[in-house]
Image (cartoon, rainbow, N blue to C red; front, side, top):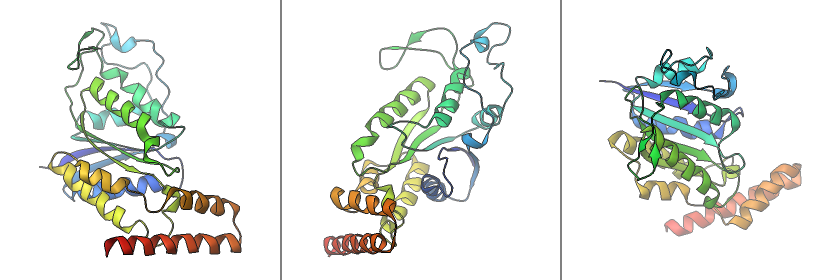
Length: 253
């Protein structure tokens, strides 16, 4: 039986590195999947108005806004997997992606109950518990820049009853254009998709994907040179990339 994959591709850039790693994860899930990928920034999705019409007895679970979020919700009603792929914008979700998450207010019921963690939460509509994975990339070198987003995503999963099933986090995204430097990461991201199919992305795989490809100081210098542009800057970037490849080879040996 085919599984239904709901994927949010949240980068506003084309081509998108974040979408590339999302596609590698989907590839790892295998061919026997029904994949629905959505691009929030290309869709007409209004912000949640907080009007609570979806909580009214006359219109339970119905949003007053008839827009493109209905397409996402229709897939969600059958989804076995929820893949949230987003670049890191000011240490959290881009506004267009947060807009989509806010609209899932519609799956909540107005009553308040005690959560599994001991706090307060709402009962849920639709009875869906998709395996949810966070996929994100960051232009800074330090993996700690994802801390707020990771916490946010786990909290979202807790209050929507989505089954948190791991994360794929790639820092130093500005080095992805260097030939072969990210090849091992790409293989590991595909492996993460295969692990997700079995139940959960392992911490070992997550850590290996997150491992830096070069020292932070070298990376910062590379990114700065990329923005400067010009022949000399490109030559210096190539030198940094070659050094990183040689260092990786020495480690393997």
